[in-house]
Image 1 (cartoon, one colour):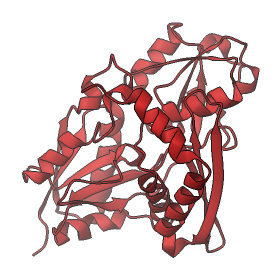
Image 2 (cartoon, helix red, strand yellow; image 1 turned 180 degrees about the vertical axis):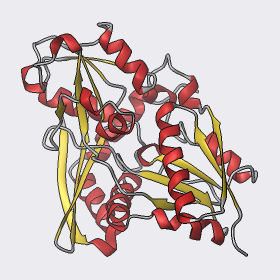
Image 3 (cartoon, one colour; image 1 turned 90 degrees about the horizontal axis):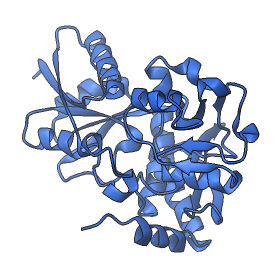
Image 4 (cartoon, helix red, strand yellow; image 1 turned 180 degrees about the horizontal axis):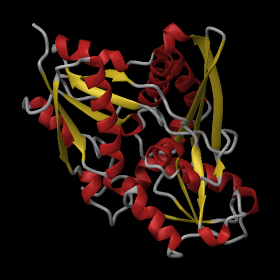
Length: 317
């Protein structure tokens, strides 16, 4: 039976709604006559803004409320920034589609009064805002003379804090800035040898209910195979390390012919220990590449680093 209605669950943040409305518009173009509605809601991660993300925990921090809507049949799909979607999903749900990736790089955004600066030229003691332990650990490793300060809130709120002088610069995802129309605020795209990006960064993941074949068929028109292969390798790497989106694990993926090359990193919170390596293989066997690289990093001490981090930032009961 042909699908006649599709219900989308989304976070209500401005970036989430931009992303969800893009998915809605693309599906409407692909399926004329399909009635698509959006249910927007706040997630735990949206509500708790006075605590560092790593202290809250990351098991469904930005996703579990949306997943609950699908599990009680109030929504058919949920649109996520893929970097926020845990690698282990609730029983009955699946990652149905990964969209074409925007630039996954991290970006430096500098206070308007300090436009000439880039990471290499920021004066000693400059205050850098980031809520990501991944960014924090890598930048501490390369720039120990800078001061790092947690920053929460949506992208617009963070930019307002920057411009009011609370920070000298911010580190944000280039993809999110571009989607919100703030691409002109990017002073520097941070190269991968300085900061490997988050797993899935720049891509959207569409989660759906297992067994709803007509829904899965409808959303598959947005699947981008090269992005999916890259992200599945990254997610397998993260899953095998038993890490979450709030730990210092970074990745980069690229194609060399028909080979997929995955670079991965695990760092201590102080940035003093940083383990980095790469693995490659057939793009059609993406998850095996991720698992292989995770085991390589474990053999080099990544497990011990991650255990120390979990013991340090583990959320209070």
